[in-house]
Length: 270
Image 1: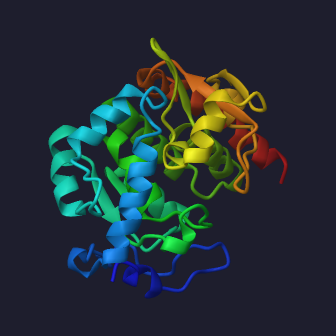
Image 2 (image 1 turned 120 degrees about the horizontal axis):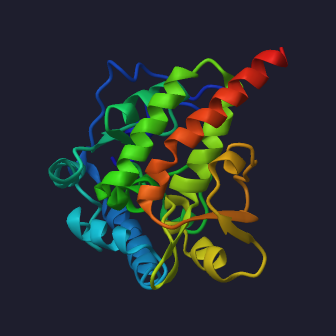
């Protein structure tokens, strides 16, 4: 079944799945997806793909063509990996769900993006506490065809591993990941667009992030982001806007400098 990998493992107190990530090789059992699984994908895909034109970055739309998603079938990750390998060299690495931070960054440092293979049920179409395959694959994978974004994620992962035992730094890098890869906006010539996967996979937050008068939309500032808290249980009250994916990648030197300051501050606070 599509849900089988998730159910094989227990979760720890942080919600991370307990298993040997390095030694356990999980695969997508594609033939085990049910008719309902494909129906869930189709409903979510068709609902959101209609909502994205003139709202999502052009790089996402280019990417979704490259990876070959179909509206009425759950993506076959082996085929998707072939497309990714030919563009940026990245691949999807199957996980049951959230995994420990160290293993998460180690995989991305090696160009492996974590994704689940289970899908929400028909009763969970509009709300799900834990990210499922639709979020992981529909939201993230098309932009894994964008080289500057991939380089940014890889370098950020390398930086995180350098400070993996420093809780303050890992929390700060988590904020940066959240406000860019998950909930980032980009200003393109045609207008403001979304690129963060958490917005891309949410029809409600797509419109809220672009058009609502409630949240702030401010220029990308890595130093500010590293010290800005975020919310998991409701829409964000602030979004950071980049002007290009190259800007993200080129911000790494600034990020490294600020992370070093946070590391020093955390040592002085002990």
